[in-house]
Length: 443
Image (cartoon, rainbow, N blue to C red; front, top):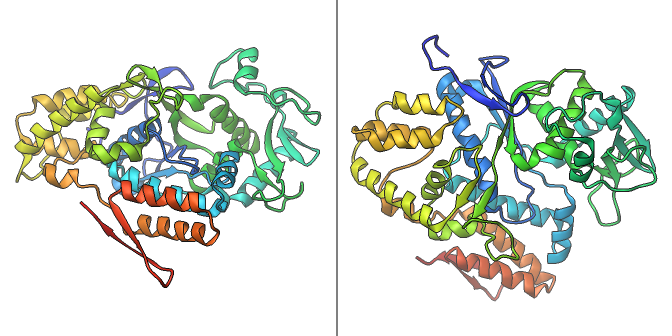
């Protein structure tokens, strides 16, 4: 980064202050963000960290160079929710995770997000997880009991430094499991036995599987090192997930920090209410993309500062669509030129996207606006192009393969569910006499 480049400042949850960003190595700026657990379609609340940290990824690439930023966003493909959903649908865990991840990848691209440098899967990092557990046991920070391995929370003097919660709140927030093999209420699972039919791996403590918190510690260590620059995610992950990640990683490797900067986006409500299936306002990215182009969803998300709560409304979507309509008409046939210095100044001030957008409204040069929007991941090519939802063949083929497997198992409910999902995407199926299925897109 040149000496005259703007100074990037980020709010650090760890210190509760906005700080100047100083990377450990400017030639390799490293960021980790918690990704999806692939058991179901991601909801619109899940889209917020995807979009927010994609903007930060783009900004870091702009400041330090595209080849000098490593962005890791994981995929959790071993989890109790995955096991339960696969059993509920009568399909294999592998089928469920492959199908769900394929749709997730399509949705996140439609939101304008760049592909991260690495998208590691939890199941591909079992060896690293076992290695961390062994380090923790050797250092006196973990213990094996009744086929489980648990982190000994009292062994870490400053546990709770990130969330800064009183002990009784941490106990409540951790949803403590009472078990006879636990030494303390706050101790959390690093490894647990696998039941019949559940995924499992051989380990020094028997066949089992990792705890959720351990997965991210292992993947960040593998791809970013023992200490890295930025760790991000939703504010709901501060405790217990990120607190426990810090405990595992710091105690395993003996450092004062796991990441130097911790960033968290705020909660999302829908039409002024907490999103829930019982209220009927639970909406997925996949569903929204049927009615709105991804750049509208993205702009609407960025109109609220990432650390503030956001109220997701239809009125907001319509306003965002109107803004993009205007900018598209003005950008038609215009090549992007240079990014506005005012937009850069806003983004380098803790990703102040609302201020950046206010500057976009005042820019008179459509080439500058177009370049500035592209830095924020928003495409203002012609509206006709962006409104046509791209249907990726790989996603359709994966869904068809899963449906054929369901039909072979006489799981007609799952077969019909997938047919309906494809129909909602605009894909029509034709089952052939030889057992194969062909498809076509109906506009």
